[in-house]
Length: 79
Image (cartoon, rainbow, N blue to C red; front, side):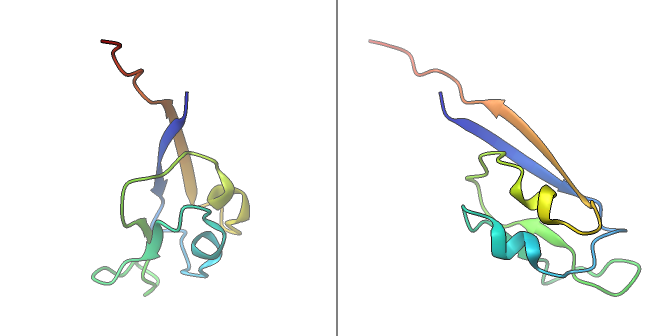
């Protein structure tokens, strides 16, 4: 069964380096366009569904600002 996931970005630590964006195989992470963190950076965020919970973003984040949560997709009902 395929995985689905989500991420949480600790905005206090995110410095908008873009490594998570460059390395996301799904291409669903971007910098916020309407928020700044306390340090004046636009924090990273999910911009659409499709996260598989692979964890690459968390691995490449130099500030350890990303936590990844992974769950199994619901199994479709057989007719």
